[in-house]
Image 1 (spheres, one colour):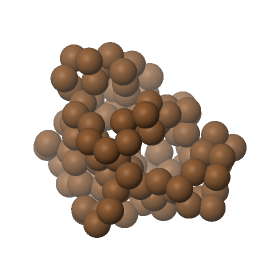
Image 2 (cartoon, one colour):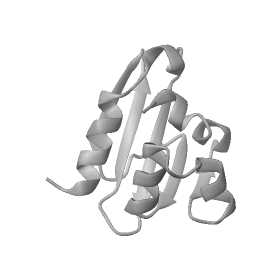
Image 3 (cartoon, rainbow, N blue to C red):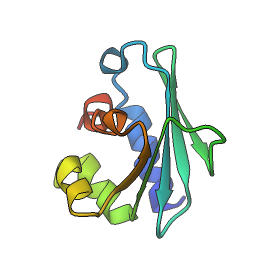
Length: 104
């Protein structure tokens, strides 16, 4: 199994339905050095999909290392965005909630 897939599966496992609070959203992750994945949140559930979603709410582009650092808490997501390590398109405010929805 790919390292990227492992990261996304662990995110799904850490999904906090209370934090998602009736959210309907699709997070598209375009990784520079790995396959793309998306996480769909609907009705208090989170599902992972491989590849491109046809209508993501927000698209986040970065390399796999940046994703791992942000999701492990080693790197602040907003700092990574300001440094240009993460590029976001769509509902950027939604992206700021990523570490709340998928806590460590």
